[in-house]
Image (tube, rainbow, N blue to C red; front, side, top):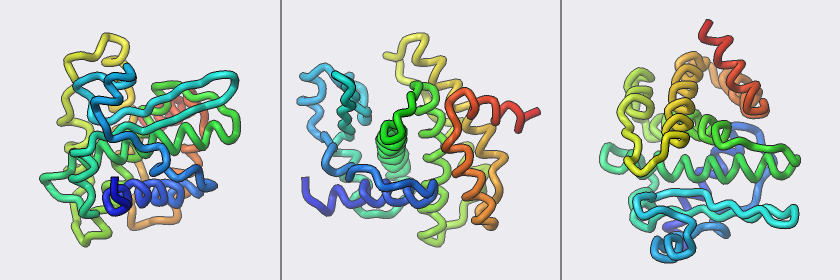
Length: 214
């Protein structure tokens, strides 16, 4: 995989580290897997998945890889978001979000639940895509972006009941949170809000959102 194709993933990682004022985690490009056949053969990725964080914990050591289908990577290689590649950008952002979140939590020895990681990933997709569009000079109403990200996606038919519950719950909670974020026209307040939330534990995140909605 050429450096040019992987550059957007590194840019996404840097964006997340800057938004949340994180200490840098290992370069995601060193942990990238794009060969679907290899990932499926290893039993780590289902046939219908284009993105997945691969996690192996053994003897107190955490091993991570990010699987991102080569076709998805090619769609984001140009560096710009448009109507044709929005889905690819969302997949790439979600994968990088999961990697950064789990790596950052591991650095401080904090446990992470799957729901917590999915919730933060959904929020990160909204925040990052909005920032990317603004950087391109594209103004999209928050209501439209919320609809694209949280109202339209359909769940894969291969998911079991627990996975469906988790994804639906993460999407619902993330939507509630993003609706109430300070506007991007108030960046300092927005960043403080995001950074404070990012550092909460999973149960605390859910409690914070529930307080916001009541």
